[in-house]
Length: 520
Image (cartoon, rainbow, N blue to C red; front, side, top):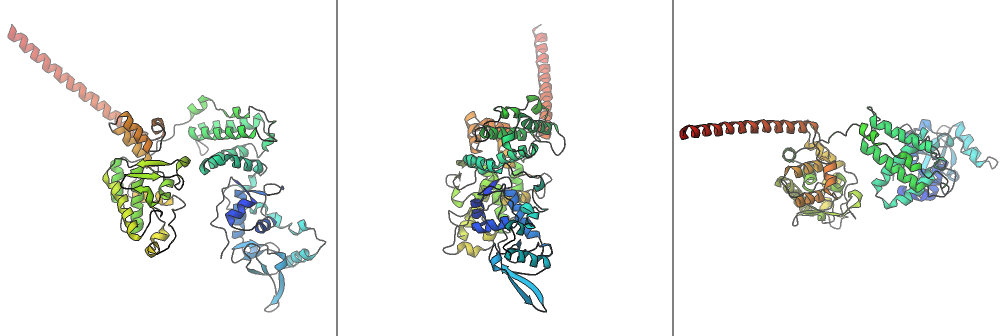
């Protein structure tokens, strides 16, 4: 079986131990050691090793991309791993084949399959060195160290600028940050890595107020920039906050307690800096009538089309996020109670928050679309524990769904299907809407309806917001075009009312004049 590890995705900013890599890649410790010998660069020389996610990913990518003509002395191209590997030295054998062609064979150090290559003089010298007891071990791998970290041209970040000096302390922070959700940890790590880069990769135990001021000045510049470096007020505020939280934790760690205690204070930005930033553009979202029209126009011929319609419909029916939609199971859609059960123990919910989501009182077409989808899944043989929106692999093989004793149909790993459903819905209109636009639509609808204060609170609760202020601050904001239209309407209404009052006044004056004439 292929062991190219293409399906394994490490997070580039995270730090991993040998045990972490063993569990992720399903390999033994010797394999990790072989990777290090083959050029994978640990974050430092201390043991047990730790590794930056970006470095490990680039190492494997570089091994997959190298062709037979690019192999280093002693390196083989494994047909199973589809990677350049150094075989276990004890398995290497020399042979003569065909018309005197000299070859080497061995066993892949990753997957233990047989590997072969036509030898070169450099290969022969390399393997001769392995059998020479007077050759230092380090010098045998001298050439393999020429590609530290397996840096390839397709890595996601510029590894040549990467500093690994702080990885071990960041790993300790990751352990502390386990109290947060995975997405929250990723956002904090992105801020920490940004700060590390802006400070030139300096060791955290050497930080000064001048280093932190560099980060603050960069964030201030991002607020007023009008190019690709521009960042919103929210992004800058959160970045500064995440970095400050990290510094507060860092000051309590051994080896860092002598740092200046006021380092976090240097990340505070003046109000004037935030005021100078351009306001974030309003999010585009349809009103409910437009959303219903988009749903009606979506194709329904294939089962994949019907899945897309149901996904689009449930986004508005429950005001759900894309990650939540794809992780729902059949049992979470309760048609009898008219609720969607957001069980955070099995559903990917924001901040790990469980919630009972009432169906929003919107057009019946939305709920009927989801109900039809649920009925079709039941007819295929799906059970309560199966995914509400199975992957194409399952839906393309109905017999496998109805098979006796089959495994549960697990939810899809990514929200791509939700984005695709919205793309299909918007294929014939100029404005393209994102999955998150459904929450904006529902927030706008709340303000259009004559609801009582308690009803407005219930509406916000159903959107997953702790208070109405969250709904007001972030969702359903008016676009410039919509605001202009409303002001035009208000102006016309005011003029119309003024004209009506003037006519009434004229009638009243005329009636009064007639009465005066009659009386005299």
